[in-house]
Structures are given as C-alpha cells and as structure tokens.
Length: 232
Image (cartoon, rainbow, N blue to C red; front, side, top):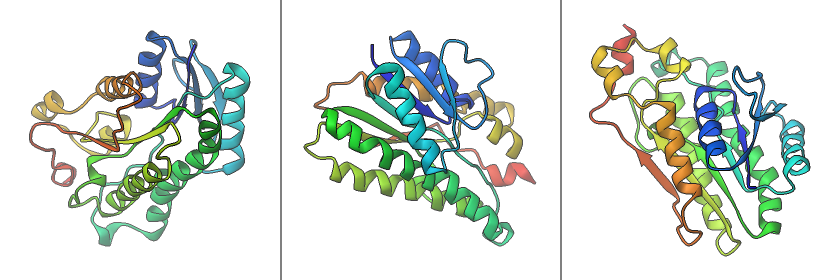
C-alpha cells in the first residue's frame, strides 16, 4: 500500500485529496494544526508546517506508520485579497510564512528520504496567482509566485533522482478562505473550481507514468472572478 502525507490536510482541499487518494488505495496521513472534521479513515498528526521540528516529526510519523513515503502534498495556505496600500507588513509576513516557508520546510525534510528511496512525488498546491499577477492580490501573488519558483528550482535539482515534483496552479477554488473574502454571484458559483476538482488532478498526476515529468500544471476556469470588485 502506498502512502500519502498531506500538509494542510484538514482543509477542504486537503480533505478532498485525502478522500480521493484513499479510494485508489493510499494510506493517508493528515498533518495540520487543526484536527480534521471528517478524518476517521485517515491517520492524523497535529503539525504546524511553519515549524521545522514539527514537519520532521510528521514525516517520521508517516514512515513509522507506512514504512515508506510515496507522495507528499503541500496544500496548507493563507489567503489575502486587498490592494498593496491596504496590506500590512505583518499580513505579508504571514502569507510568506504559511505559503512559502512551510513548503520549503516540507520539501527540505522529504527530499532526502525520497532521494534515498529513488522514487516519490511532491505536489505543491500553488495558484494561478503564482503564474500571473492579479489586481488586489499583490502579496498573495508574491507568495504563490515564490512557490512556483521553488518548485521550478527543485524540479531541476531532482533530475535523475527518480523523484518528481509538480506545482499545480488552480484558479479560484470554493474554500472557506474564498467564501469569507469574496461575495460569489450565482454565475461565479457555477464556474468556480471545487476541492474535488483539485483532488482529481492530484490523483491523475500521482497515477501517471514515472516517465512523465510535469513541472507546472495550470488549472483554469472559463473567464475569471474579480475578487476585489466583489469585496466592495
């Protein structure tokens, strides 16, 4: 049985990935600050992904439970929609800590094990905001561009190791973060991505041939959702 360790696993996207992975035979471990609402079928370890010691503990916990580390998913995240002049330095620091530092720490802890195994997959959940700038999301875009850049560099570092890494970049996903920040119209609700859509992409990637190396996977929607306008 293969294992999947999901950081940010208690969130809506993490839970959707966990459910989809379990259905195709993965033993799933959720690592998150908060306990999952519906995680009876999964192992859980309380983890602050911005703390290196706790990240290492989650990795070791997974190895103890499963004997191997097959897939590591980074889907922890912080979300902020506002213009740059209304974004505080503290808010920027928080975005960079949760969206970038945690991904760096997880990759740093997992890579030596995956390289030793000569196989494995790291999936970093970034955003379309990490591929193109969006008004009103300056700080958020900066953090997600950084995740894509980290993935790009790690992709190069892992060449020939048997370990794959991909950044998936969804457009707007209906999560509690988005629902608190944006007033969605009925049209928006019809086209916005669902957590299950992101889970489907993750399963497609990890199920693909080891010969397939995919650095960045954009996940678009038709049109766009102007989050800043919806906030007014």
